[in-house]
Amino acid sequence: MSAKTALSHVPTSGPASVNLPAEHDGKTVGDETRRRTPVLYIAANQYSGSTLLAFLLNTHPEIASAGHTIGWQGLSPEFLCSCGAQLRDCPFFTAIRRHFEEAGLPFTFDGALPTKYSISRFDRLDRIVFDNLPKLRSATLERARDRLVERIPGIRHRIEAADRANVTFIEAALDYAGASVYADNSHSPYRARRLAEISTFSVHPVHLVRDVRGIALSTHRNLGWDLEFTALHWVRVQEQIVRVLQNTPSFADCAAEYDNLLVHYEDLCDRPQAVLAKVVRPIGLDAPEGWTSFKSAEHHILGNEMRFDAGTVRKSERWKRELPRVTRKAIEARCRDYARKSRYCDALTQILDPMFGG
Image 1 (cartoon, rainbow, N blue to C red):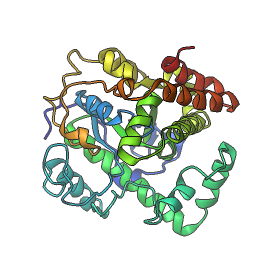
Image 2: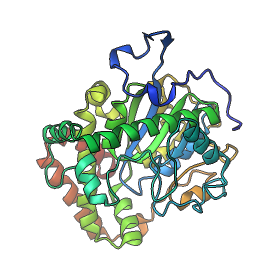
Image 3: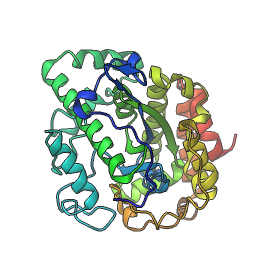
């Protein structure tokens, strides 16, 4: 059991609690009174510092997080948890597996967790069914796609199974940690929208942004991508996150003032206590003093190599030393030009101005 403070968490009832009518949330249903479980969801581009944010959130006594709740590249029973143990031996994931067994649900570490919305092992097909439609940046078409695939029996069965898996996983994580709020660092805004449709959850999105020049350098160094191509990809991802959040009814109020959702990686590193207070305020939590000293807490985070180096907040700005001025200007021009032509120009400008001035 984690050293987190035990809190009054009202658990859901497992698989049977999925897809209750939304009007019953927090009200009496039969002989039970249900409470929606708060889920902080981190929507972000890769290399944005989301693993750091997951560690910080998991340090809060009322928050539990396993980081990337759909799994991680190369996931297997031998994959190392941030606690240092292989997943099959990790006490946290052992407890998760036990909850799944008690609920009569399958649980494996084979490539992905059962919490991932998926119909195949081919990522491209999964993206078409559950994520962004290639070259079609339209919230209307995406919603029509969602309604269509939900009418296909085989796909509907997969969605319902993933819904049950997510309820069971989050319930088990909160039980293990003695927490009341779950933080999911799975990046895709489409997953946030799916989770928001599960009536036992109250999803609160956070849009985490890192300076695009830092993203470009990290992606170039790790994946070999062209710097300007990465910048264009990045700004499209930001537009995608904005589009999904602003066009999801349950997020509409908070997304109307988009700055309320934005968290800049650089601010998180410079002023962690203040930024974390902003993140948890919408769910009614306070930011405890000394929160940012997170090495002392028990962590079971799936994510990049940073999961083994957690303990201090260190800002990475290598791009300031390694990117030539002409490259920086070209990256800014790419992003500014794209933002000007976007119907989400206002939100994109709120993202870009702190980086480039404006």
